[in-house]
Image 1 (cartoon, rainbow, N blue to C red):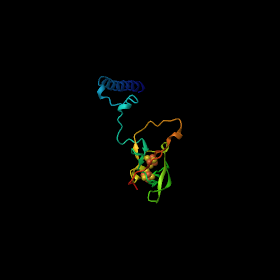
Image 2: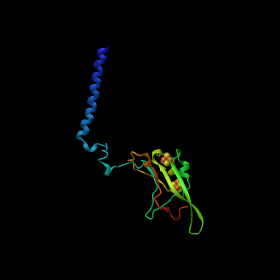
Image 3: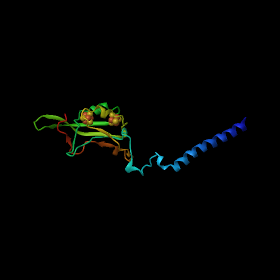
Image 4: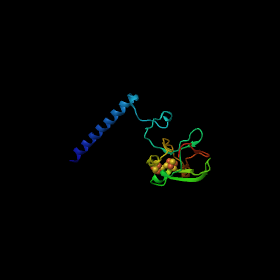
Amino acid sequence: MFITDYISDVFKGLKSLGKGMKMTGYYFTHHKEIITMQYPENKATLNLSERFRGEVVMPHDEQNEHRCTGCQACEIACPNGTIKIITKQEITADGKKKKRIDKFVYNLAMCTMCNLCIESCPSDAIKMAQNFEHSTYDRNSLVKVLNNPDSRLMDGVE
Ligand code: SF4
Ligand code: SF4
């Protein structure tokens, strides 16, 4: 019957509201148990999960050296063409011609953070960083060159 169904729904609604308000009241008086993080107020103490993937980066040491040989394994492994490796030929100290990386171009806008490039790299040259504030008005700014200007391949990495 319509009227009994209607009254029953009203009581169910009130019961549900009471349940929600009880929970709100509990956390109002138990601040320390709140696990919701207030962003960006908590930026300095932000605690991201270790597994969080925000951006592919190429670490360099204090001598501006990286571990990327330009082998292109990451470029091949990337399922959507996010990485473009541009190489050049260099003459080593012993007069041999060697392929070296010129530019490691990474299009953050296309990256799905699948991690395949990092897993495929034989020399541990790239890793995931946890930056996540990537919003921009210019999508071209998301196309990045990961090797620093004037950087070079670390000795001993082939
Ligand atoms: S994380 Fe995945 S999508 Fe992003 S560059 Fe690496 S392989 Fe490509
Ligand atoms: S990052 Fe690794 S896989 Fe990619 S080109 Fe450099 S050495 Fe090769």
